[in-house]
Length: 136
Image (cartoon, rainbow, N blue to C red; front, side):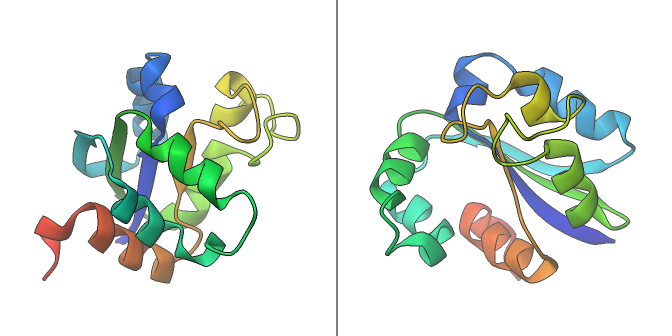
């Protein structure tokens, strides 16, 4: 079974959309195998988004992710990385299909509710950052 990391970002938590979003993944038949709520510190967020460190939006991204609680999930299933990314929709909600999470609920490109790993390799790296207690 393939695994992916999903983050329900602070805007999802603040807007009380956690249950609705999780139910979308479950209704698709995906398995949530780990879940926790935490307020990430700067180190976690910087490690997670290390590929964006030199981009101009990086400081705002770190501020956004550390401003409140995040719900981190490990989701498993067949072809789960691609499936979850399709469920989430395009990063910009104006371009996201209507039935996707971002198409239904996101208010802006900078605060777009959810993160999902973009590959199996990214998922492995990201799961170790957010769920170090599960590392082998």
